[in-house]
Image 1 (cartoon, rainbow, N blue to C red):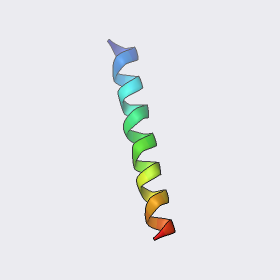
Image 2 (image 1 turned 180 degrees about the vertical axis):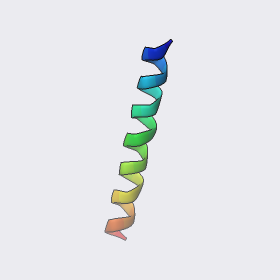
Image 3 (image 1 turned 90 degrees about the vertical axis):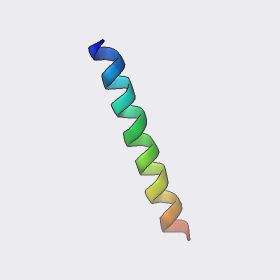
Image 4 (image 1 turned 135 degrees about the vertical axis):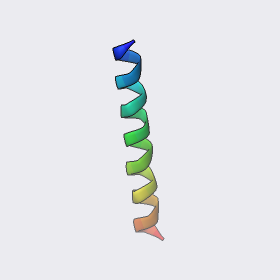
Length: 26
């Protein structure tokens, strides 16, 4: 279960980084 939570947190963090990257291109 801990592995699943860690994977989800990583996915959210990566999505947030991508979101900030798209803002930087705007």
